[in-house]
Amino acid sequence: MDANSDYIAQKSHDLYLWTLEHLAQHNIDFSQWQHEPILDFATDVKVAQQLGWQGVHSKSLFLRLKGTKRYAVYLTDKDSRLDSKAIKEVLGKRVSICPDQEMVDKLGCYPGAVCPFGLEEEISLVIDKRLLEADEVLYTPGRPDITFGLSQSSLKQLLTTLSNPIHLL
Image 1 (cartoon, one colour):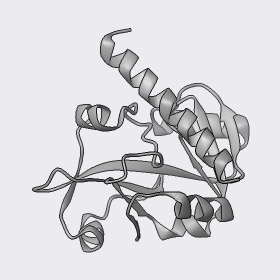
Image 2 (image 1 turned 90 degrees about the vertical axis):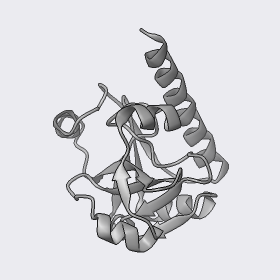
Image 3 (image 1 turned 90 degrees about the horizontal axis):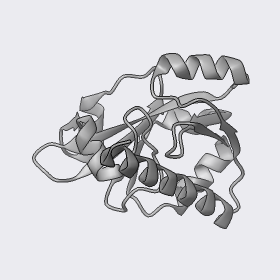
Image 4 (image 1 turned 120 degrees about the vertical axis):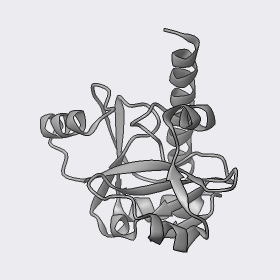
């Protein structure tokens, strides 16, 4: 492994540990699965079939607000596209998807496995409100070989415990 790979492995594991601790500290129920690393949608579908997942598969897009040094994460279902105009209405600025290296430098996550929680407090979270209606939402807690499932009530409870600005879309 090179230094960048070691950095990502450590940061993503730290994010995973933070998530475990945070969920336990706030008595938030969740499911957890360990599996082969998921870094693309094809592997996600394969693993979901193997493990019999029924929840909504989410994706987290790391965004930069244009003309600023501010960032946001957009959490939505895996099949939705980025609606830049709607995000601009919520955040007040146009956004672009960050290049992989910028995302790695800022978050320490693997490309394709951005964790939407446990981020620096100034990073805004934009949550697709349809996820709040799902029975279960599946997401990566930093490590691409682990998936967490949160029930509707657990997701709502988690959002109340975070210090990040949260916007529903």
